[in-house]
Image 1 (spheres, rainbow, N blue to C red):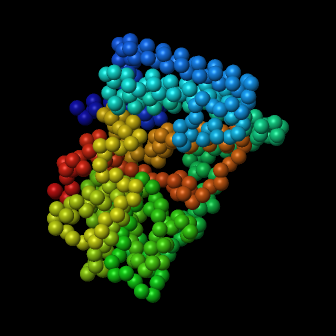
Image 2 (cartoon, rainbow, N blue to C red):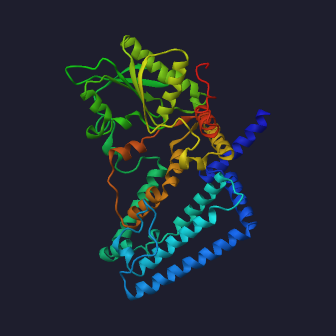
Length: 440
């Protein structure tokens, strides 16, 4: 049986490499659900026809109004957060015609993919998301001939912006082939430019290093602070540049701070479990702090996935009567996965099976596999706007400490991440009281 399952795993892993980690089965099931129910809904089809006619009339009215008055008001405005058409040039013909036509098409496409009777909510969200990604490829802002800012820059520089953009693209391709970090990351080297708050490693095991930061004040608060960061990224998210460091601020207020630095796992760690992360991570750190400061309770702070793990550990401690925690603070952490936001687009049995197969094949989930999903969720900001700026405008965005930290990512073991996604995201065992930790 295991040999047959291995064949399926290998096939799934190869498929995932070709599809960028997105399950074709998940997309197909969503599309079939939507297409079948739309084909069986003549009322919805008539509604879409009427709305298409109205949007066409609104576009024609704008074309005629702007032909007589270039300052004519638009008939539709971008959604909040959409800055693609914010420039003044987009408000004048012919570029205003393009942006208005695109935004009306985007609005109609939303109508097409929503409120189709009989379609499951998850499939509706997946189809809508996929349709939006396809439409965004065709946005006039992404075309050098229909983007007025690119046209103006090309005219002003005699086309040198496109030459520079071509050079930027070649540099990025070479860096990607060599698996090098983005340009400018070297200006934020940990220990020199970022993560410079003085500290020392006081404990280590197979999974963590525990760093202690000593207060810089004459008087010291008696109760220490433990920071549990996400293991998906490096620990110094809360200790970036000196002017952007929570840890530096805490020690300046007289707090003794401990922070966990997670191991960057390899294929040999494929069977490390979520329980191992709790036991060898949070609990091991608490035990060491208790050994050093035996009479003091601990203020625990969890960031992102670290906050979720800290919540699990705190619940298990409460079940055993362990009262070492003075307080629990969660930063951007999730404990109820009933509504996980846009990440739910990538969470269903088909998608999880694909991810598990990819992790099974390599023993871990790599940073590039994770980055693709997050970039798609904000494709306008993280993909298209960057391509326009870097490859069409010929500019480079200056690297900052947060961007450099984001590029310094880590891997996640196969078994742990599979448990995390299935037990928390898919089954929501934690908030429903079905999650077991430490035998409870």
